[in-house]
Image 1 (spheres, rainbow, N blue to C red):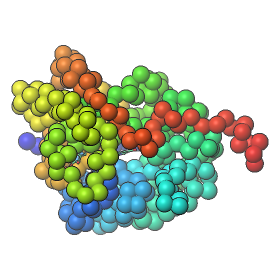
Image 2 (cartoon, rainbow, N blue to C red):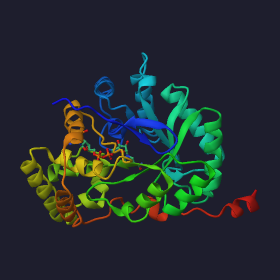
Image 3 (tube, protein in one colour):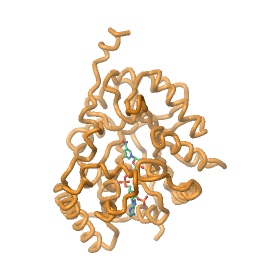
Image 4 (cartoon, protein in one colour):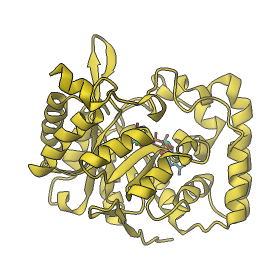
Length: 342
Ligand SMILES: NC(=O)c1ccc[n+]([C@@H]2O[C@H](COP(=O)([O-])OP(=O)(O)OC[C@H]3O[C@@H](n4cnc5c(N)ncnc54)[C@H](OP(=O)(O)O)[C@@H]3O)[C@@H](O)[C@H]2O)c1
């Protein structure tokens, strides 16, 4: 079935994107070895042709190779047909991952991403995580300059707390907040979602398929390749899997009833959160991409939404490993502390 992919305004500054994006991370990073470049370029071209034009990447994916891949895929006149979202903030230092939001890094990271993507501007530039050593006003001040210089068009934050979002938005309007949001990751609903709505900020749910678990269930875990980071995620550990597999089984049973796939059902639940919500499911396969676009035509009643939520609320295990930084530990110092220092 051909699905007409709607377009939406993300945030209040004018950015227009497809109602569903394409998460490109797994093509190069996190989920096993990088996938063959010609196949990934074919997939990106297929997505653009299908109307999915909002491409999500980051400088840390690879690192760097995912942005280079997207740059190659956009040769031959495709740049103006897409909206590129990329991110900065994760830096390798002495074999460890560090988060940086200081002005020097923001600028250097942006310039490096522009080169790797081989484009003149980035549509949406996010702080991938919040540097809790730097007042958010300072990070945003540099991002604002990059907007004024035309290097980036719009600004976003990923995994920021509600108060950080407010402080950031007061310096330069945020267009989007990217956070994990899916049937089994709903911690943002109490504070982050209402704050974004009050301020007119779009919401971009990452890992909307529960990193693939809501699509494939325990089979996903059995088939993970060496080096797949999901092996270390609490929800996929043996002690939680018995419980969590029930969620997948229940989602699958409802999907069968409704004549769609579990992926489509999980994604449809995210789409039903509103027109200011643009999920970015990740895939490395054209057939899965096609299935996921089909989610846009799955309709859910409020009763079905409730039923799905009840299944997934029983999830066991944190959504990130203990090393993961999330909005819950993302408060930054006051601006006065920075001024006093410099
Ligand atoms: N801001 C952040 O901190 C952050 C964190 C994580 C991710 N992200 C972004 O969000 C994007 C999406 O998140 P994600 O990739 O972590 O998780 P996801 O979208 O929830 O799930 C991706 C997984 O689902 C599988 N899948 C997709 N469609 C499927 C289908 N129809 N049937 C069966 N399996 C299917 C994919 O495998 P196949 O490749 O085999 O299809 C992949 O393993 C990423 O690509 C990245 O751009 C951002």
